Length: 219
Image (tube, rainbow, N blue to C red):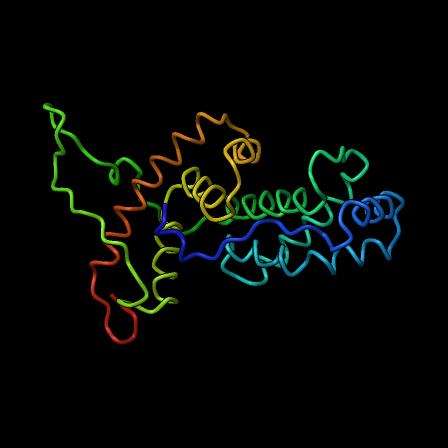
């Protein structure tokens, strides 16, 4: 969904330029409780993981706490790490999980029922209300920061299950199987939720972008 391209995305970074050999050395150090290995691991991954957390959590303090929780969880689980993914990919998933847990615990923003945002059809199978052609918003019509804010606010107003799947698939760019694993659901459910979430998000964005703002950014 190209409208989400305005929200910064990134793949989990590889740990360092030394490749697999360097990662194995770090992993061995972490498993042995080597403080220098832990400090190096944090140095190489912290800034990128904090950026991930900030895409989920508005307050910097919450993002920092989620990343700290993720490092603690990783160290506790390191003896069971099987090496099926890179350390940085594994940490990325743990950070995302930590953020989702915090969002579930602190959800205060009102959400819009998903069914109200989906296309409605009459008995003949035609749209029950008029459907406008989607016009891709550009930074020529509004500032990049304002457009990013609009998209983020629309994502945040989605119900939790749908918001999470949009964040994981379209923002964090995880695949369907990875998303299903994190959300403890099936790939089929992920595909269904993502389709419905994208439809709902389009409706929200159409309304938000059609609503004029004054010079202070207030509707």
